[in-house]
Length: 344
View 1: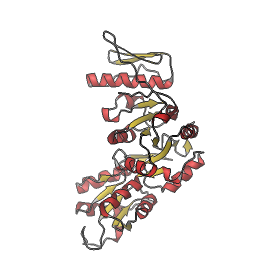
View 2 (view 1 turned 180 degrees about the vertical axis):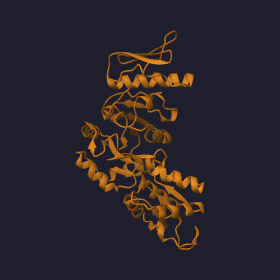
View 3 (view 1 turned 90 degrees about the horizontal axis):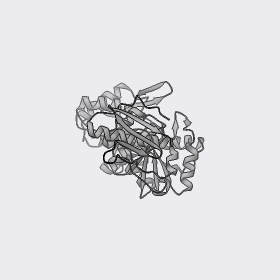
View 4 (view 1 turned 90 degrees about the vertical axis):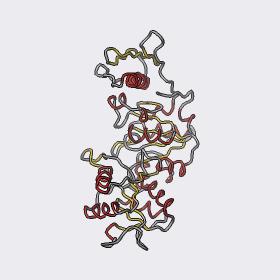
């Protein structure tokens, strides 16, 4: 269920780990109000780290994009799944290790920055085996629009034959200018099914990316902020940090009310303005009553349908709907119907 914070989140937590697409920007444009909300959070003493599963863009390109949107940040405040993957490889194999790279420029730069020797998959000689002297000790993969099918085939055979494999992320889709397109997770699924091998995953919801963020940016009381339940929120839950879901991205009413326990955020807010306020959990029904109460709103379930009445803030409406819907889901095993609701 939702949590409470008597202090504004920007005071209760010293680090906000922010997903990018759907939280800070959508496509090339800033989410309305996001630069101002982030500047206010920094003024309150909260550090802001920008965390992305996108392994193709180098951190410097992301920094430039954010600054063009009017967001103040240090170069080290952007942390990518490519950096996390390269850090995993360095920890496993040491500086100077030879690794094969299948992905975009961001992945190549991350491998080099960790002191690893990156090589093209095509450089492996026919008949070479994992563990051969002077050969690669691992393979790392990430999203790369220029990756060739012959490279995918070579990588698949090497993984099947025993070469350790680190995947930057498993996102099944990515937003593009021409619509939602297959993400790196589609390639990961292809390699996994062919080789019958599970990779070590660096990006959300796996742990390495968020651990890497805290190590690079610092923070003793981090808060994960995202728009996607199955990566941002589940990732925060996996590492034991509180989470804030903002509704400026991919999560809508249908996804929120059906969220399983590991994908339920600590806090819910319409946008990043939720960083500047205290949060109170909705009041559960008392004995003999079936009505949830929260900040001017009241909700009850009738014949499997959720009904909300009253008047209050948009944030409070979403918080009440989440709490009442999750309680119904846990009690009955069935999602509550929301067709009678009018989103504020």
